[in-house]
Image (cartoon, rainbow, N blue to C red; front, side, top):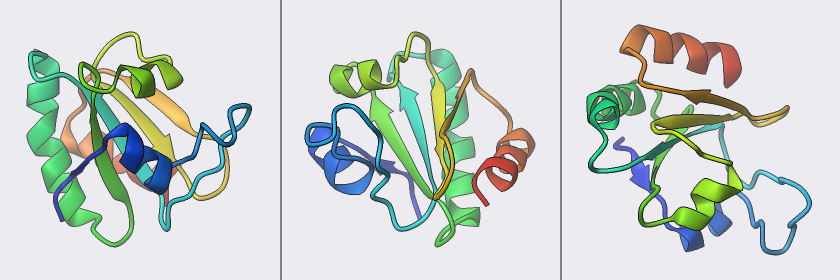
Length: 118
């Protein structure tokens, strides 16, 4: 399963409707999620992209992996206070979301998914 690119409209349907619930975060997903905030011009983001695709296939049906282009979806980036890219947001089914910045290798990303989401 490939990563899924999110627009604001898709985010509101799949992740959280922050317009209806501006003071809180109610996750709407069916399984844990990982969101990669990236830009097309970002070198570390380009290095992370194939890792995310591989991890997306490995965790298909267990974790949904999304991508948000910060240049196209500035409102979503500001919602998570994204100041540098790539920024990864880990959203478990229960519990608080975790945010990590910077590109990581496949072993580190898989370990983080297992620890934070599964």
